[in-house]
Length: 314
Length: 254
Image 1 (cartoon, chains in turn blue, yellow):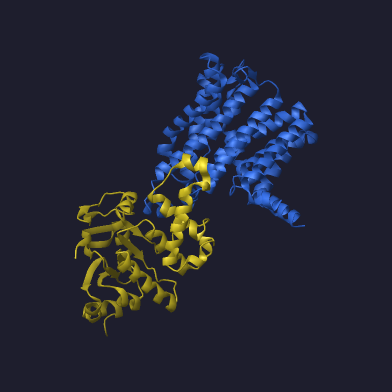
Image 2 (cartoon, each protein chain N blue to C red):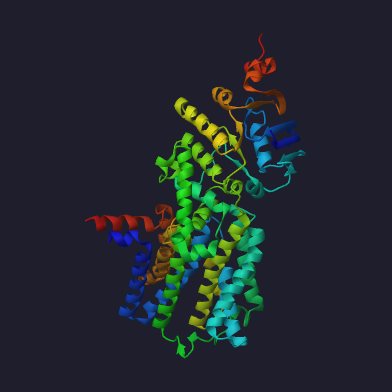
């Protein structure tokens, strides 16, 4: 067990198997669907965690990337008749490239200014989807499901498998990045931009690339979302989504990439577990999130790690 | 000896307050050149202008005979200007070793995509780790390699900044009060380290420092800055005897 904690690959794999297994064992379509949403959120949150936790760059515009990924992929599949996997990839890459137009000017900004600039970007995308998106504010449907050759992803379980496998790959790669000196340089960016510049590091390139990666993961998540629910309307892609991601990353633990999946699972499942409280559920939801942010400064991850270590040392 | 760095008629003011009033300075290659003067004389501002963190209102900076007055900080680093900071700028959240690794990485980066795939299994990771250890050894910090950089006492953080600056393989090292926060023994050791850096590596050092013992012991040349103007220049012996310097430092006798 100690070995698992030490070996990051192994613990990621174990976590992945646990998720898949719980989905297959419970096989309740409702539960599986929530787990799929949690996986999509985890993928998006991972993008934000790389940007915020690792590189220290704030973004409140992730909803824009999520929306662009979803809409572009759906439209590529519907209007251009592209195979869905191609549409997914193309939409994600295109969104990441579009993100550069935001990144280059925005990343010269810091802190609050960067937050506001990205917020503006998210809002613009949201407005554009409302104005120019098919069906306007009421959205559009009939988006094809994902298929790979003769294999069509229909059942929730197949999406569960797909989403979390993609997350697994992204998570392993992200961990590689965090454990490399490139990742260390990003963390250095977090603590002293001045020192980094005097060492000859081009900050703009560093920031733009991590922004690109962050946008890619969030757009990919949005694109899969589109082909899973097969119906899109702009409401899903409002600023609220960015705030939700922020909450996941903060609540999960911003100092580790593990914060993203943990926070995503927690925030996605919380409203479901609060259903029995009927009309008080929103109130409790807000209360729990607020208290969590106040009392768990280091995120859920910290007490969890401590608990695990205690349990192992027995 | 060749002039490595030349500062020509530099003027700088902040909100109407003139900090530098036509400063000229020539730093010869392979020397330790100290820049001293009372607080507020403009020493740190001059260092900032030399390495590009601030730009002068007037005047020129020449490095190896080429003008770099409007060259960005990052490019100056590549040309061979490195520095440390009076108010520490270490990378907190990284270990001592990792601080130096980041500097080494910056010299020959291998990019994000490769890092995504290979992580720390990359062969170069091991190489720069060993290289970083050598730099830490040079400033007597190897025993601290695995510690979190921000947990080090201020004096050792200064040494870490020196190791990190050395890692970019500079031609000139701009040091802003490296002895502040060090005790006598540590200052002694720092002096020897700086001399080694200068003699063995051939790195020129421009040193801003208040510890006069250290300055007199290791510098080849001293420039005295007072209220944004050069007050005196010369060898340590000449400076010690200069009546103007004595006046500026000790105040006028009543």
